Length: 349
Image (cartoon, rainbow, N blue to C red):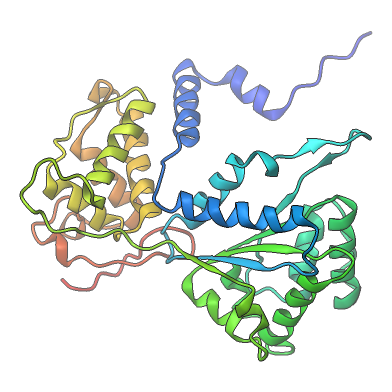
């Protein structure tokens, strides 16, 4: 008797979900795949091209790090990943032995990481896990050896501010020396991209010889700005008009009709809701789009109440502290939690 063909859990869900869920899933996939071009793209592309040029030259005895910094919700992780995805030289491929290899390995820095836990995380992502009973020098020797074996030159460490919360037994200085040593390893010097909040830069400053600072150019993902309105309707060289373009672009990608007038007050509310940070503002737009997709009464339109609901969901606020319903919305000030939501406490009221 022949056995039934194997199916994955996703196959099972797709085959049993309702048609509306399947349709909405496809739209959400399109939304995720939609790329927003930012003014930071060229900056990161330039650093990647320079790094690759150094690697190809064969003249570099040691690697260096590029630090991409921005406040929580600035969108730095998404921007870096998009630029890595867009660079043809950094796409994985199969070698002559049918092994999948790639020039860049991406790792999320573990919270409160030590030199050991960071090294173990890198090895797990590289497909070469080792026992956590091994010593730090052995683990990091394996990191370099594994990267060399896989011909991986660049290590991308996201959320690198977690390195600042290392236990005091060895601490940040010790980890800084470990990372610096990996970039200076004569067998296979590593090149690094470190992304995190601005506090991450204190990690680089901890190097007493300032060698890390010399090797770490910084790309800052700045907050968006509220450019003064000069009264010229043809002037779109500011972040308010840019966010209007982003909103229209994402709405079209989801095959929805935008039924919200893009007045300057609305766009300022939207940017204020996203605390003037690109990533958080786009997240609110995407959550509003989700509300529209599941709102059968809206008739395929993205309307104002979807932004009200999206902000309520991400901040757990009431109508009096909702940026989209409060008359004094500009006094509502929140921050970003570790989980990416907005704080429920409000200042400025």
